[in-house]
Length: 397
Image (cartoon, rainbow, N blue to C red; front, side, top):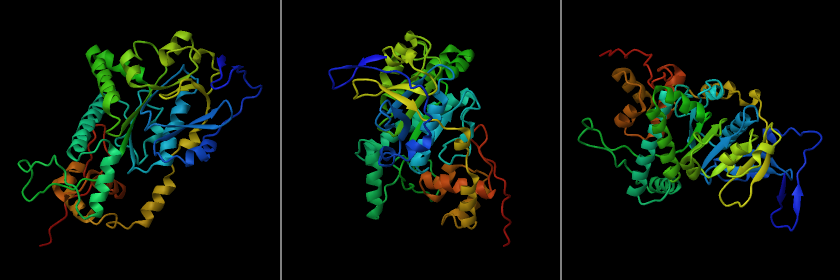
């Protein structure tokens, strides 16, 4: 690949090394450029042609398209990005929605506490999840407008200052007319960033198109809507596909997702579809990628970090240690009352606890998760519902 070297009056000829170097994800995660990054959405990419660790900030992108031929490192690169955020952020800071048409590619993240919903493998549920993201985006915009802030960071900062003053903000969407007797508006809690990961976008569209072309078109419209305005609401997308054709990566998708990563592709046409220029067809494969982002006038060539299945595996020892350190009923001051509400109403829903206890979403979600850990309620089924496993307590009076 011959190209002009930016800032120098020469051209450079890139040639492959005689022996390929293996770049581990740990090496990038322990680098200064990653550890010093303040953003919880910092993702590790690999090393550039000068051997320097390369990371990207998904919060500034704010959406990323990843494409490449089969076996060229796309899935490994996607796993490296997900693990980067898991290392950097707590579940209170970032929540994830993962859509996996292949069923097995993202299943290893099933027990991750950052997930808003179990890994989605049914494409009808994927469409419903995208609808939820759009509705959540609109809800967040109403909150931003109500409290006079421009983005999610400003909202959370204002919320924190109000709590410190002893004047917590109340949910403006609370409707007294439909509320139960004695209910009042719940306090707002900080809103986490939402990271939406779609592993195989082309497969998702293909599965939906089998049920009707209109359904696939609606999903594409939802993706475009999120790409147009979800950034300020704190919703960020990573879309991956191994079929970079113009019917999958349309002009509207590209115009709303300016940050792109191309792994090796089979033809110059595919490279132009992803990057608007050639070059990706000349890559070496096995994690070799070209990265483009707004603000840079040239492509960055990166050797992607490798992450094995053993590095992705969820560690149960962390959860068991946390569970052992907490006695039942001491997880939250309202935990006992919440258990009483769930067992008597037979409704194990976050929204039910929000209304009855007048608490925010994050706190109610943590209480429900604690109930699942202790066996009071089941895990979510494919419809997103939980079953109450504990019978209603007997009234001894």
